[in-house]
Amino acid sequence: MNLINFFKQFIAAPTKIGAIAPSSEGLADLITEVADLPKASTVIEFGPGTGVFTEKIVRKMPSEALFFALEYNEDFVKASKNRCCDALIYHDTAANAMKYLNQHGLDECDSIICGLPWASFSVELQDEILSASITALKPGGKFLTFAYLSGLILPGGMKFRKKLSLRFSKVTTTKTVWLNIPPAFVYCAEK
Ligand SMILES: C[S@@+](CC[C@H](N)C(=O)[O-])C[C@H]1O[C@@H](n2cnc3c(N)ncnc32)[C@H](O)[C@@H]1O
Image (cartoon, rainbow, N blue to C red; front, side, top):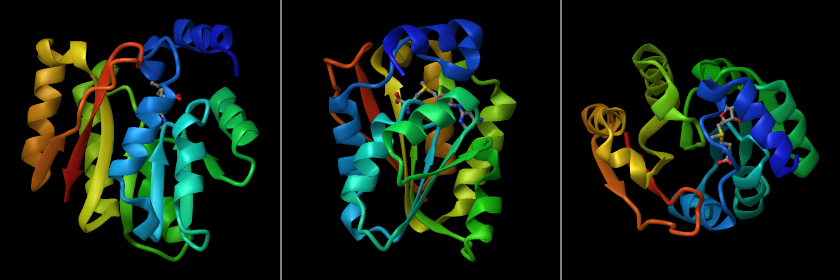
């Protein structure tokens, strides 16, 4: 999917997409690096969009590990499947992560790499997806999600940071990727 089509998806559903362009390669490198993928056996991605993170997740994970992504938007399901034809992309909400883990005979995962637009979600949807994430992660499992630097000074961004700290046992942040549009960093939260 090209930039114009991504932008059209944003115009059609701004609160679901939450970004005017896909994340940069630099942000994709960073979020997949902190996920410690070479040691993972089960990884889930939320909101792959055009598959910029997906491509790197699949490359960095052991070949025998289980990976699947949950994407809400049908056009992005097609786009991420086009980009990563070997990846398992389900057309569903991230809130249903447990259902797919169970379908694979599992009840926990090592990490969740998340590309969801938290700042444009309602508080109820944030809580629903965070609860599903915590249920799906093993103890010590990692929840990686990015945020725009600009959001840190906005009430929504500050509340989300606090929510992560209340829900997870440890939350750290990475360096900022300045060449991302807009500049972004990664929250590394541990169950
Ligand atoms: C900001 S885009 C990020 C796409 C990609 N991860 C990236 O960084 O370029 C957010 C993505 O989350 C998807 N999304 C929004 N709500 C979702 C939900 N409840 N469950 C799964 N995916 C969702 C959108 O359709 C979109 O593909």
